[in-house]
Every structure is written in structure tokens, then in C-alpha cells.
Length: 317
Image (tube, rainbow, N blue to C red; front, side, top):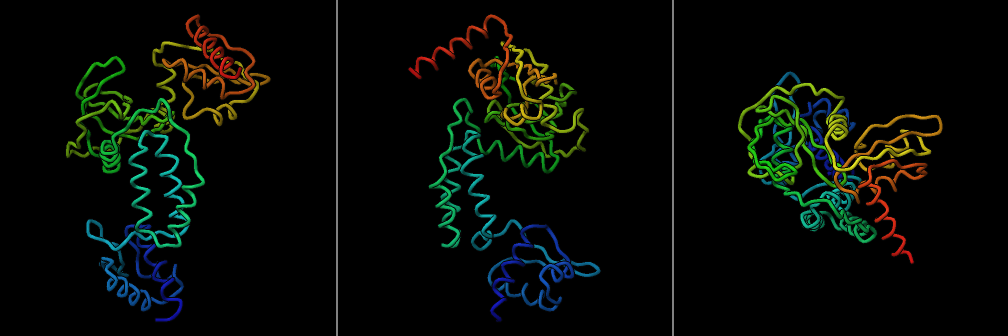
């Protein structure tokens, strides 16, 4: 085995993990070697315990089998840091702090010492911001929904709406969107024969129906756009018209997730129409906008905003 062979084996394994199937010719081109060398390297991976299967066809190919016991997880430097960053930040903001911590600990156990130290350093340097109002999401529910979306499988579940009313649903999942720490599924409801949105923390008894479907075309560009339009049209406790001194693109960059309302361009900035049931959340949205010129709202929200301002003023002395 030459000095460059171990590095080439790692590169080959990384390629096999990145795509379901590769032809021998493609692998040889990517690695800069001959087809014979690829076959020899595949044999070495098999000796190490990696289940690399040969595929039939004109040129032949290879794939890394799934559903079997694999040797320890192999990630390159960038992949390891990316996974750790996702666990440290995204998962914490989605109401899965304990699960993320367990996953991060397991990741550290299977990584090489060199990468383990880099991931540990990232963890020590990162201070996650508490999600506050973000509800707890069952990772099992998230996994079932994600798999159903991937496989185009009909989902069944029990659902409780914002008023606590329970119902049974049968849907065709289209996509997942995260908004302010909440997971929202966009799906075609077969019982209502219309598009609907469902918050994952309100779902229970979630299961695949073992029935495949052909995905429908959304009435919007994507799931996030549909959710934004739905949020704007839904009946809410509070509504506000906010004039700001920045443009629409800057507003979208400052607010977390889709804007729960419409945006109007003006000469010196834009107008943001906000809607919601949580007065504190709307107050945080307004504060995040910056350069607020004027806020028009109903009496209830104005009183709530004054209360928030008073609390902050008192806290600041």
C-alpha cells in the first residue's frame, strides 16, 4: 500500500456516502486513477468492513449498502464541523435541546481524536440562545414526517388546533418549515381536499399509511411562501401596521422566518403588516425591524406594547 492509498480510500468512501450509486468510470475520474485501482480500493474497503456492493450495467458500478452494521462514522473535517454546528444551533432553537446534546455526545465518541477536538472546541465557543416560546417537538414525530415527505407516503395522525379541538387527519406531506423555533408541516389534507398547515408539537399518533401518492403542485413557489401567505390571511388576536425606514429585502433579513403579513414598498422604506396571537412575539418582531417610524395597532396591542416598553424601561433602571 503506497503512502497516498489511505487518503484515497477516505476520498472513495466519502464519494460512496455522498451519492447512492457511482459507475466505476466516474469514480476513476474523480480519484484520478484507473478502473483497476478503483476495483482494488473497493476490495480494501470491503476488507475493512464497509459493505460496498457492485452493480450491474454497461459499465458496472458501486454503492454503499444501507440497513447494515457499518464501521464507525466517517466524516471529513468540514462535514464534522457542519454537523456539530447544526446540533449546537439549529436543533437547540427548535425545542430539541436534550436530544441534540445526546447526539453531539455520540458524534464525539465516534470521530477521530483530531476531529473530536475540533468539535469540542466549537461546543466550548458556542453559547446557544434560549428559544423561549419554542415548544418541545418529539424527534420521533419529526423523523416520521420527514420520511413520509421523502417517500411520498400518506400520513395519518391526531391533531389539536389552537383552541384544543381534536381531529383525525390523513394528509399528503409536502414540506417542513421552521418559524420562530416552531416546526410547521405543509400538506394536502385528503379529508378537507385542500392545503393545510400543521404544527408538529400538536400532532400525535403519527404514522405512515403505507400508501404512496403523486405530489401535487403547491399554489405558491414553495412551502415557505405558502405558509407566509397562510399566516397573513389567518384570523389573529392582534394586528399592526408598522412603517419602517428600510426596504423590503432588509425587513425580510431582520425577521425570523416568513413575515406574518404583507409588505408594501414606500418611497423612504416600507410598511409591514404584522399579525399574531402572541403580543410579546409581535413586540420582538417590531423591535427587530429597527428604524421604526410609526406603529398603528388596535387598542389591545397598543396597550401590550406599552406594557412591554414599561417592563424594559424598569429593567433598565
